[in-house]
Image 1 (cartoon, rainbow over the protein chains, first blue to last red):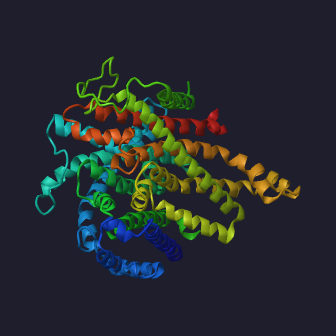
Image 2: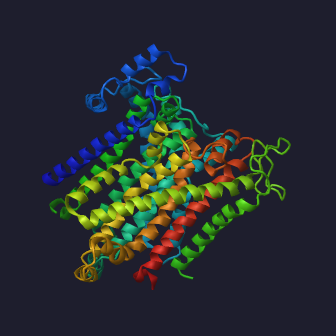
Image 3: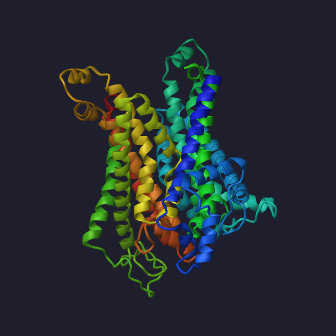
Length: 314
Length: 270
């Protein structure tokens, strides 16, 4: 297990470093002088020179990358150009909105999709199975941001039950913040539930078709026992993958949902950073998203090893 | 009609509708999609305006038809980029193997960490946001899946006897890859292309909604939703109609993909 873990950790680290290189070099490719781009056409030469030094443009790119990456590792992510504050602190504050949103949506998706997918698989060949299949197929085709608009239309505009957008902040009002996250979580979670339900059903069907399930049933074990002790445990490996995938999807999906509901999350900040040419902030935000995705896929692989000894020792 | 046929037929109808609408928009549109008509703001659907009008009194049906064109255009080119790049990388990695394989697949893995929206954020900062950056972002984000599928197919196919035979008869690597291996790898790629188109349509709409895709002066479904959001209290139609169009298109591609997969697979085809 240890060898497997170290090998997988190493490839994850390589991925993160390559991702940081991609983020860094993409912004290097900005046509023209970044300082001029940020300050506009009428900038004073002194201001340009000062900004170039602030952005570190007076040092060669390779050296700049190493310095930036070193800073990232130490927690010094540079300073935002539009806010004049440390990037790391800004990102950290915005994660207070984005992470609860993503986790809430993932939790909702699991609560709906796992029972539904398993239930549909067990009822294969009956009239309920196709209903679940069609519902999940349609659900997966609905864009989350459009579902968000529909939810606003219904719950905020028509019924006036919930706010159409905005966020009071955790320190101001916890219940208000939770209320503000309710519709965004629904918008993000329901579509993901549809995707997950389909995959869970397929995973469960796969396991139910295995010989050991037939053997267990043939030797007279009650169906309940067969499902919970034999089938479900083996379907878990696939379900964990689905879970990791879902977490990635909702975290990335939160970028769009934050825009729909005017939530002050990381995605919305990244979008304004583009408009304001705030490269240090944008670099940091994109790196957080990319690293999270790599980390999630690493965790999925590690849990594979825990769940399935064949993978551990391979 | 069994499930496979049903998927193909329904998916085919939806996509046919979108393609038909896009083709129609080249020859005929009921109204100029950008014509402002302040006497007809927020019109409900009627015979005059089939889907109603938006806050500028622009005809939603005309705009949806024009949007179909953009959706297909971006989706097909993005998936085309992903398919060609992914297949070449995957085929070479699988065929050559060894360190070469390891390096290519590590690089492809990195793209996994950048889903379309993230890639678009990055590209939009460098070049200005627009249709081209959206296509490239969606395309690059979709490369890994094609590379993986292609590599897996090549790895299994290159050990087959008929490939061995072709090599023994003196065929070069290029010929073996293109003539002997590629046809066998084709069906999973075709299926994935259809499924990827579904995801590409969703991504394009999301990017346009964020202002990172199709420019605001060109009607696209994502743009229409973005504009409609501010006026939902006045009329729901501009916020509902484009969403239905997106949904049907996504559903169409994914049903078509599922149907093709079952149809191309001799075991489920029975």
